[in-house]
Image 1: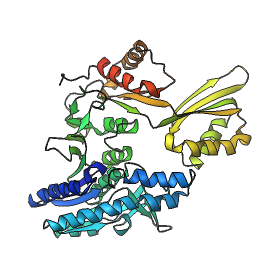
Image 2: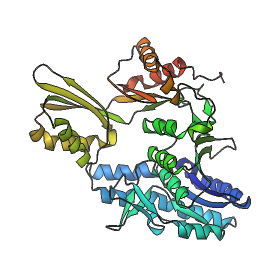
Image 3: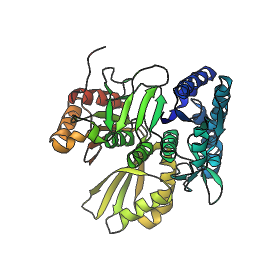
Length: 408
């Protein structure tokens, strides 16, 4: 007997037929003798609609009220799935984040999980009941307010819950049947990976791969939660996210990821003096805006141009924060460009092989694609390019690194 947390994304619970399908899958695990908890997202499209309403009312809306609105999508699906499970003879009960409780910090819209009290859920599971838990949400104990964990936060909820109840495995069911070398919608010859290391998956998730949310992989790596990505619609083997030691032969490059969710900001003619960078990025931190790629170009006149990227969803907030800090920082102008994309190559094999970046730059140059910004880590190289070149760049790099599988 195993203890399993099963997580189902929005497409898996998009309508009543799919919710019934989820209930059947859960029943199969229960009848196999396993203790099961389920985490679900809102129905596909529901959260997008809720977010749109908030943005239409006010682009700079109160983040606490935003959380109140967008957390409601998961409340619907946990109730419906609990009803569906009860209808096929499975003892089930729905749980919202505050009922468990899933305790978070106060960063509304992108809260971090601080602690989960898992004892009650363990008791229910041992008694044969299936807890159906709302993903994406928690509670800030200081003000007793609902919080949300950021887009894709149901993955984080599932991994955190798996750690809290000491689960043997966390199964993430989605609309793909595993983790691929890149998006198979762009590259039909992308290959499914049987196993991928936590570190590689973390890098891929952080640079745009949509299969797993970044913080969920980070937590899985920290807590050593074994994660399996599976299809909700097909009975096929999935992909396991595991320790690097469990993978016998590491390729140089494991995958290619892309993100169209980036926006580029350039500060023109920034005074070149100590403390300016701290002032710029301090303003971003105060506005709760995450900054990614950064490049600085020193001019001959004692000023510098500073370019960095933020999430598109944070662009208005970042521009507002910079506008308020302009008098103190003394820059001439802010230029915003939301029509960019970040392309990344990832692989632990980069540690022991030279020439990975050169292959990337050469492949992009051959396609006439200009590179705007470059950033690297030990197992990743990322570039910022014009958004219109995204698919061309992904296909070119996938071929350049020898990742193409056999033709279908």
